[in-house]
Length: 230
Image (cartoon, rainbow, N blue to C red):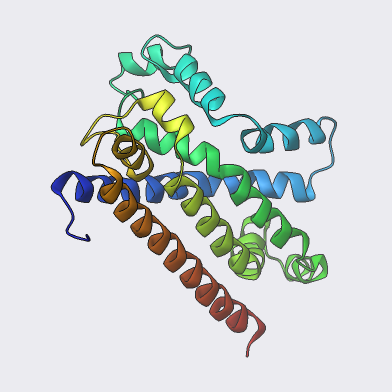
């Protein structure tokens, strides 16, 4: 039952690659937006917060279609990017983009909660000792929010690993290029005799996600103890 076919191995590797790039690409933007929402006071803050979380409530197919309109070869941004050799639609990079957008709200939420929990007096103490804003962030704020960073990255990774609707709408289901675990499972459910392969990949998806969550909890606890000096 667990002898994997070449196409299944390819889909697993591609899923991990897409999820890792989606998470890594989302992280710097996630930290910036989380800081803005946690610390900023400006008109339109609620609107930005709503836009960030919009992918959570919209149908994923809608998100994928909007990405196609924006980053497709003839899209508003995609046409310009194609002229300089950057193409997202129907490429694995497009899958990473779609997965990153779908996981972004979960990343931002975890980061924002961690930032809001930081005692501002600790940061102010660092500033009074002569540290600039960047130094305060890198040496004080970032270490304090590391458990939240880890949790947010794992949530984003898990969401990216399981993304289906936005991915298949934006980059289709091309074997070896954009066919990830969810889209391959869907393919197997549509063909006669594909139930065993679909079940096998479902079990693998659950195991990968479960291991990621356990690893996240272990790392977050370790980082938390280190930050508290235990």
